[in-house]
Amino acid sequence: MVRIGIIVGLLGIGFGIGSLGCGGRAHPAGGHPEGGHPDGGTIEYDGGSGQNSFWKDTDGIEPESAGCHVEYAAAGCAVAASPGRNFGEKCLTGDVLVETNPGRGECHLHPGDIGHPYTVPCNAWCKNLYVITLPNGSPKRRGTASAGGRCETIADHKCGDGAVTSARCLCSE
Image 1 (tube, rainbow, N blue to C red):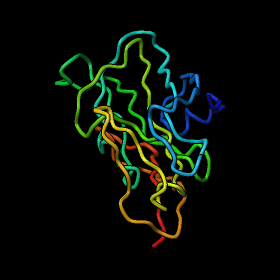
Image 2 (image 1 turned 90 degrees about the horizontal axis):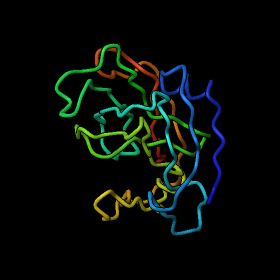
Image 3 (image 1 turned 45 degrees about the horizontal axis):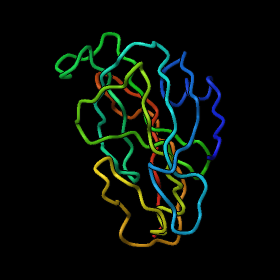
Image 4 (image 1 turned 45 degrees about the vertical axis):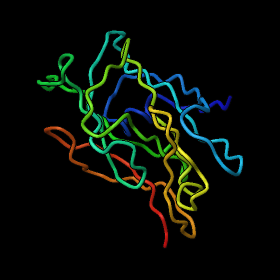
């Protein structure tokens, strides 16, 4: 198991939430490398309330697209939470992207306010050397190899009724 240390202040900036903790445990179920990359998997994201929370992801599992998580008031995701704790995707390092999931526009529960976003090593993803295991068990890969890539931060990304800082894998062609 790979230990990824994330400090609360760093997450507060990247996710747009000032008071959250993150256990930061990586699990191999979220993805796997074909070349032994240690930074893939999932991490435990603790929103801090201890209560069940409901969310929609804006981009699904698309590492090359900046996305965000929009909080909703109840199951069914008919009414946005007010105030919402919306947050964007994040670069853990210059190479590792925190990719929210499960699917675009899919209302889902974070039991106890805990979610499990993927960590994607962008350089390996861009080179087509990294495979993400989707929630239904099927593999997802880039499909074409590029020369390489990195994680890129995107400021003022539209998220719900506001904007957050988000991130994506930027691949060189």
